Every structure is written in structure tokens, then in C-alpha cells.
Amino acid sequence: MANPCIICVAITGSLPTKDNNPAVPISIAEQVESTHQAYEAGATIVHAHVRDDQGRPTSDPERFARLMEGVRRHCPGMIVQLSTGGRSGAGQARGGMIPLRPDMCSLSVGSNNFPTRVYENPPDLVDWLAAEMRTHGVKPEIEAFDLSHILKAREMWDRGQIAARPYVQFVMGVKNAMPADRDVFDYYIHTVRRLFGADVPWCAAGIGPNQIVLNEWCVAAGGHARTGMEDNVRLDRERLAPSNAALVQRVVDLCDRYQRPVADWRTARAILGLPLPDAA
Image 1 (cartoon, rainbow, N blue to C red):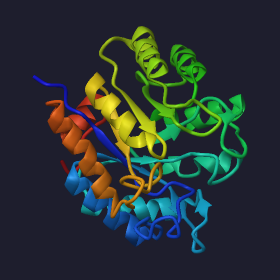
Image 2: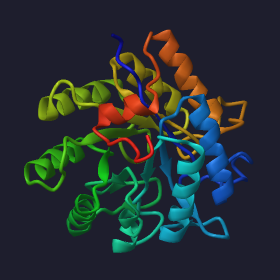
Image 3: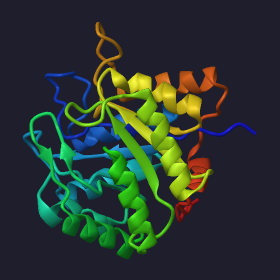
């Protein structure tokens, strides 16, 4: 049987605004609606950030709780993955939503350069975030901006800081970090399989115009794919993306081209070792 492809939609992020693209969902209601459209198009993971009333990124657990509640009501079975990223807060405030017990949270296990600053993930904070995820039964998605982050994930797994085999996502195309380089991408796959087993699931995200490039590399190589307006607000140089669902549809089309079925939410949960919702 063909290897099903999980599609993750990163709906908002911390940076895109309606000035960049009017379709970027900012309010909780907009995010829930955009997620539902993406879910209907084939996405089974939503990677979520929240914004305050001025549209600025925040780690406010109350806003995350409202977003989770809306997604779970309108997108039954969808995997909710909340961001602990550094643009939304500082220190342990970045993990304030973990006690909400989403299915997953992102976990960046090392620091790297971003376009205008250093994305700081000091070891003590990484250890604390990982411990909170273990305590509350939340599966981490390792966001690997560098090869060393994959090796760090193996170290943390060996130490019992990560309960199950990590789900590693390669992030490529961030300015001043790892570019979208095919040889590096292939070596990332080799490294993940060497460290965690040949059948370990993995994913990748490409930033800006690299999004569709990484989508195709992932689908063709047997991995899983991330898309969405957090990473890219355009269909191409001339056209803005009309919705997150439109970006999801591009990945669905790639899955058709490479004869890979799109994973439904039950299949995605089985691949990632996540339990079914209580009501399922």
C-alpha cells in the first residue's frame, strides 16, 4: 500500500499580516474558519499561533484555549499542534499553553540565526519545555533549523526527555539559517533514519517560494508536508494565496502526482502514535 502523506497547515504564524495578504487569519474566529477550510481540503494537523487584539503575537493560554476549542468543534479528529516559538513570548511564558494538553507542541531544541536576530533556545528552556510536554502528555514536533538539532533530539530521546520517537521537521529557507539545499535535505533524511529508524515519520517546511519546492521534495521522498500562510502568503510571484486551503490543495495535487494518498486524521494519528479523541 502507498505511504499516506500527512499535511500540516501552519495557518498564521507570528509575522504575516493582512498588509501582506488580506486572507491571513488573525482573530480566533478567522483562524478557526481558515483551519476548517484547510481541514476540508485535506490537512490533518494545524500548527497554530495566536495574536492579541492589536494583531501582535502572544503566548496567551486563554487565546490558545479558545482556538483549540473552536478547532476541535469544527474539525473533528484534527491534530492540534501549538507553537512554543520565541516570537510570541520569552522564557517559560513560551510554554504557558502546554497544560492545555494539545495533541502536539513545537519544540526547537537549539538556537540559530533568523533574518534580523538570533532565535534563542537556551538549553535550560529547551529542557523545561520538554519536561512540560512529558508531564502533560503532549507530543513534541522537533523543529530542526540545523543538523545539530536532529542530533540534539536523539540525545534528548536517549535521556528520556522525549517519551516516544521524535517527529522531526526540517525547516529550510529561513534567511541566515539553512537554505533549501537538496543535498542537505537528503542528508537530513539519512540522519533521521540512522538515528531513529528507517520507518520514522518526518516532515519539512520551506519558507516563502521554497514552500512548494519542499512540499514536492517531501511528497516524492516519502515524508510528510507542511504548508500554510505562516511560511508563505503567495501562490507564485504574481498571485497571493486566496486561503490556507488553496495552499493545502497544492500539496494534495502533489500527492496525486506521486501516487500517495492523503492521510485522513485517523491515519495521521496512527502514524504519529497519537491517541484518538475521546469522542471517536
